Image (tube, rainbow, N blue to C red; front, side):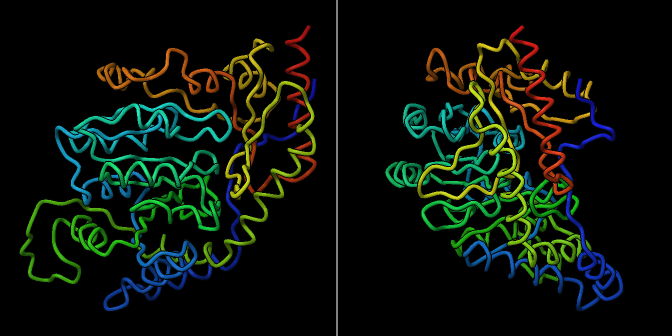
Length: 381
């Protein structure tokens, strides 16, 4: 049995002296009148990279989704259409605001929200759509934009996992009314924890800037709050770290694509294994290398993870349908329009994320793929 000599983590950052120098500089200088200098530089560099007017640095991506919906007027009695298969943070802010999440199925190739399922979910209460660019794949933004405009809905692009991906020549995050990103330690660009909201909409930007600071306009020193808002700000130290990372973003994305290329070469022709898709007109930044095993192997994702763990290799499961989680047990009616056999339910049973961090080299990929072949072969016997 193949066993890694040292543990192989599923994710990890790529840190250089630039990050260390910038954070040290922020610790020394980002105070008093210069307290926001690194945040402003990070926001400008990030907005320029994505190709939008505004970027707002935040403590996490969940805050960015929360602010997007709040700034868009989502509240009690409203419905927000979301993919059934995604991380819970994409959907939890809908509940924070007293609105109801309505689940839509995902597409078989990209694993992103299916526009036809979105159409079937729309009611007179629908206020917004959240599309998630899952594992670096891109949603069908042309179709989603068409639906949003026809029904006058807010469109939020959750690009937490897709920094550097592209759709029709535009960067991930630039395709909704707002775009949101995560800088968790596992992400393509990291600040340890952190997030960013981007938008071209001046009104939404203005609302976000007020709501994120307890309902007061930027620069306010009188403490005459006009509404009850939130406290969602990123520290200067995180922003300095993020600035160093975004200045290296092209090499970071190139490395992610190189890692995927190694896996693709090893697994692409193996029957019964499906890897991340990159449809024509898109570019996938491959935040995570994901494999879907054919159901004929009889291996669910949790048993595969256990087998990998026995080999000293860390993996993660493909997200489970939110509609099946105990957390959403009270929202059974949110799946009323879903097909009898949703694509998401079928795919999510057999998907896992393989080690995809910047620590991964070609030799590591060989070990992981060899272990996967052993696991599959064992099931075949």
